[in-house]
Length: 255
Image 1 (cartoon, rainbow, N blue to C red):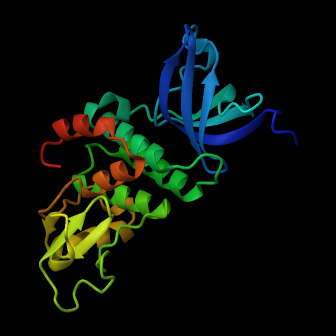
Image 2 (image 1 turned 180 degrees about the vertical axis):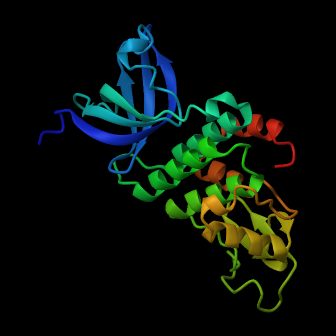
């Protein structure tokens, strides 16, 4: 089948921005194509054009076709809303958290490369945020970040020193630090950058959370330690800040 022929894809809308007078540029995360940027013609001129489906976090069935020539933009011809996450949109904290996990996934997702695990993680996170009667605790978000990094091939090193590669609990043991730019923990004497000090308990809890299903972490709180370490690792990889992070932090002052 020609790349120019429309095809239907399962997708989650991860961001949108205005374009020209009436159009939108939307970014979608799909299991088959990874991250896709597409133009939605006349999406702002009439809500009937896409039925109000183009909000971040929404799960869609999207009819897409490639743009002409070397254009990186696809064309979004039609959408069918399969899950609108309407309950989360009534709660500012849950809505902000859903926007944040979408932005974090967008920072890690590749284009024109299958991303089934990252897509599945984002879908589960949005589903749980939608179903939760109150906003999930901070460990839920941190686990999402650690899992997203793992699925992007950037697994945080929480049991071995990223400098000497020796197990952290082997001699010389603690104290330890975490370097967001290197994506892992270090023995104190291996750290030349003055990274943030972390406890053995924090490292163990983060590694356990990385391996625990998100559904089991809705009410779990993290131990004392850096609450945005994995977010900073995502930002270092993307070479840009996560804009929704500051809003989320203001709504969740304790993480």
